[in-house]
Image (cartoon, rainbow, N blue to C red; front, side):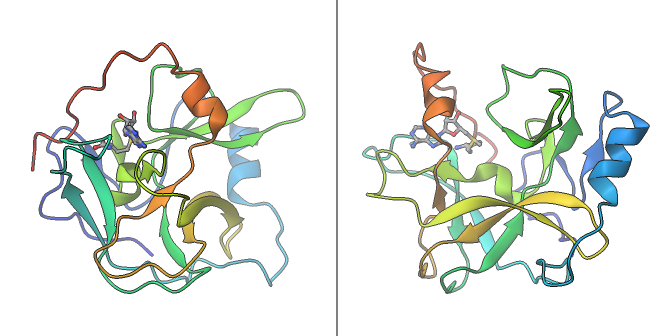
Length: 191
Ligand SMILES: C[S@@+](CC[C@H](N)C(=O)[O-])C[C@H]1O[C@@H](n2cnc3c(N)ncnc32)[C@H](O)[C@@H]1O
């Protein structure tokens, strides 16, 4: 299900309800991504996204203070589909992107990513739990839609109260790759 652009969406990022395929994705890879046969028990695209809100974080104790976060706009039960992570599907290397998730790795070693640095939906604003909460309350989860498209979504791993920040784990390797980090820029000037 696609969504409408939120009113506080940053003007420099293209809002998209569906993935876009970069020119690095060849025809055969696109076929694999879009039409793999799936068991009918798999999560389908009839999943209704939860209401989520992008909020500017104004809390000096929060490690992403001044940036944005993704917040629950409704009560969300455990193990609930929250929202698809939409971005540009690509196979080229994007080590500089902080919004690039791994979607699949093919037998020939090709890595397929979903990069939401320049386009995406609200899911691109989800923060990592470290320094904010004892553990994550949501996680990235890969699935096929009923039509067979491979996607990543955010799913809750426990009950999330309305107004609570939705937090995932980016994984240790994500942070390790950024160990030399000396400070994040303010990514939330539009709010
Ligand atoms: C996918 S973006 C998340 C949304 C981002 N906060 C924004 O406003 O665009 C990833 C970036 O968020 C920030 N971030 C996320 N979780 C963090 C955490 N636990 N501690 C510090 N910075 C975090 C880092 O700047 C990271 O590069």
